[in-house]
Length: 157
Image (cartoon, rainbow, N blue to C red; front, side):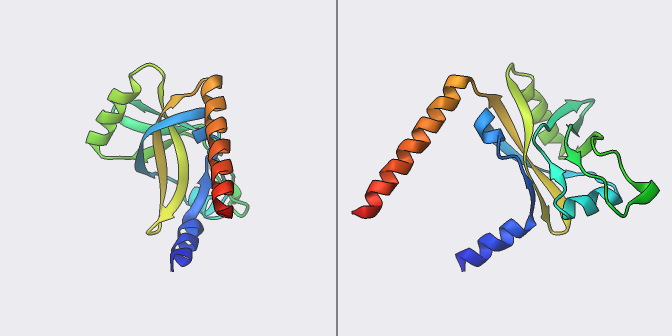
């Protein structure tokens, strides 16, 4: 039963920013809707999204997702969209104010972690994140290797 739920969850996952948790320490996450055009949602459903260099900014009381690449839809002809256009994030006013306060602090940024389909709508999991230094990354890798070694040894007992 758990395997079936996991497969259903992965079926809705359209894109994932795997490098984000390596480069940043995610402090908090928010789920946001995203305003897309017709050809954009078709490209998202075809898994043609790249979140790698994406980030979000809050200006004039609106959250905007920037630098996320959604490829052009192959059958889109003249109605196709610009792949790197800025897209509005759909959040409650209180969430936007909270995010604005948090991102005003030095070294804190908003990054997209995942994009998925939920009840027919495209959603983005946004992370309030703090950049890691090189030594933090090395410590993370060291801890992960130690945990892997411990689980390998415990498996044999």
